[in-house]
Amino acid sequence: MTSSLFLLLPIALVFVVLIGAMFWWAIFAGQFDDAQSGGESILMDDDRPQTPESSSRDKGS
Image (tube, rainbow, N blue to C red):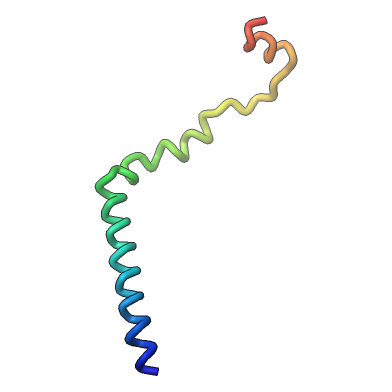
C-alpha cells in the first residue's frame, strides 16, 4: 500500500507541475486574448443557399 504511494505521488506532482506550466505558457502566449471572435465568426458567415446563377457569377464566368 505505501509502496504505491511512493510511486504515484511523484507522478501526480509532475502532472500538476506540467499542467500548471502549460497553462502559464498559454496565458502569456496570448491564447486567451481574443476569445470573442471565434464565437462571432459563426454568425458572420453567409448561410444563404447557393443558386446556380449566383455561383457562376461568383466564379467570374
